[in-house]
Image (cartoon, rainbow, N blue to C red; front, side, top):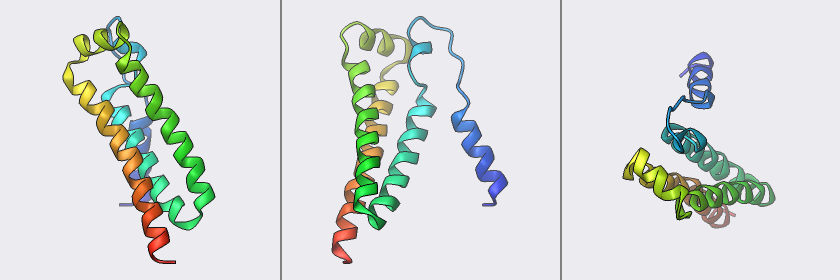
Length: 116
């Protein structure tokens, strides 16, 4: 994959998607959830293997973003409205993006200790 293709893919992940709904336009899209989760997970995996302290910075950022996504979904009013508009796929995407954000950090930490 060349640099131009990679740049186009990153731009497509960054451009916000338009939604015409009461609540859905105020929460991240499913594409953004998975994209940010994958990006932070990969960055965290490779960074924590090189420098533990830098990986901890990425871990703090990832956990903050995970907390924000979870708190929106667990809110009794907003969470119910989002699930009503987006469906259960949105809840699956929130938990899935948290999973792919955190698990690579843990694996990278284990791998860094195993090979030292």
